[in-house]
Image (cartoon, rainbow, N blue to C red):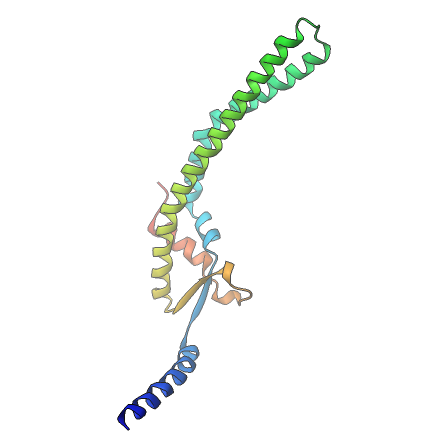
Length: 168
């Protein structure tokens, strides 16, 4: 008898708890990516990355211009000059391709490192914001179909991040 009473009591608790929990749950939404990318810290780091990789981008642009010039010269080149111009163009094309691939890889590596570190910091900020706003659950906007903008904490998350992690 005692076991059956315990099972009935447990079953009633399981049925009753979700209704009570839903009625009291406060939910907010954050567009995590937007909140993170709008921080002053990320904006500054993006500018630093751009400056860091600008010389290589400029080199690729210069090689591209040189390739265009070679193509134009090939249109009017003599039979003796043509092969040399063609070989020079192929060398420059390979060089531009290597620089471009290396640049893309390096940019992606640095970008991921920055976003991973800042993402961890933003998660801490969102957790603190959840406590401060007395919210039970914060979900990313990417997993929400529709919501009232009154529960959107994206701007608050960006402001809290900027306050806690000012740009250097």
